[in-house]
Amino acid sequence: MAKITILGGGSWGIAIAALLHKNGHEITVWSALEAEVEMLREKHEHKMLPGVKLPEDMFFTADDKEAVEGRDLLVMAVASAYTRTTAHRLSSLVVQDQKILNVAKGIEEHTLMTLSEIIEQEIPQADVAVMSGPSHAEEVGRGIPTTIVVGARSKATAEYIQNLFMNEVFRVYISPDVLGMELGGSLKNVVALAAGIADGLGYGDNTKAALITRGIAEIARLGIAMGGKFETFCGLTGIGDLIVTCASMHSRNRRAGILIGQGKSYEEAMAEVQMVVEGVYSAKAAMELAEKYQIQMPIIEQVNKVLFEGTSAAQAVKELMLRDKKVEVLDIPWEN
Image 1 (cartoon, rainbow, N blue to C red):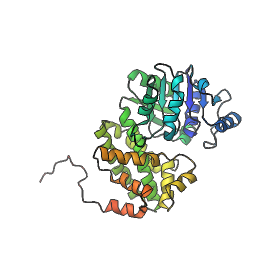
Image 2: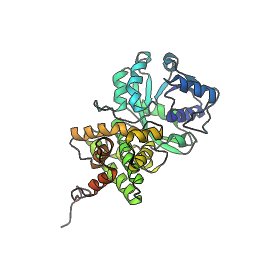
Image 3: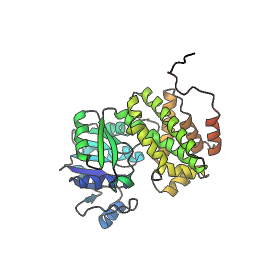
Image 4: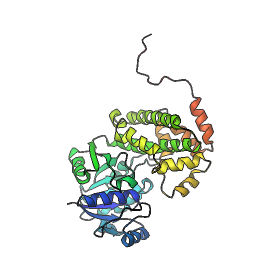
């Protein structure tokens, strides 16, 4: 049995808490929001994850010291926009080589750092790993079979976390390609916004399939240029995560995209979804990375235009369709 604290009391953090408790671990859930802690103590259920009842022997706290000290693993499950402030807040309490597993997805604006890089910068003494893949909280919380990947700098750390999480409904692979995993998990949220926008415009399966396929091509081009591995983008944290996020109504990014396609601003869409829409925060960073590495990312570019430059959704689709003629795969030779 391990002592584990989930840092963040949102739906994903709660789903992970329920999973790890069923695996026999001692679980504490920490939140910076006193009201959220009180709700969890009183109801043993999160309003954003109805039906997932939490056991009476699970602990809930807003006390930093109580959450961090003596823990075998800290699971960072706060929204990406709060990763740096949370890591900074808790840094002095983390001991040398204490393990931190980041399960959020995003890229920080301006610094263009992944979330694991932020944690390593704020808590240099920690042993930081990441977990990513097609894994909606609503399904993990209900015990629906799910497969994900844990990435770490060392195989020993990855295997340790794999053993904590693995059970008959939650299969865990491991990978050394932390960067590729994080880029796939972050950039797919921006493509999922595009897929939702297409749904909001009333387009069909052909459009969705095109966005998913060309979207992973964009993500892989950038990811490989930055040092990620091609195989990662073909796997669970690349195409796997992209498919589920573009296709499912559990996806907050797709749901927000639908509202934007119907004519709402991203602020209105986020307010209606009532959850953090990570793709909105990652879109600008993705465009900055594309410019930095001189990679063409037309879908990401059009999402940014719709979100921040006033381009209509219909016009963005038109611009994508009317781009210059291209060859789909450049490296395949012609016979004649």
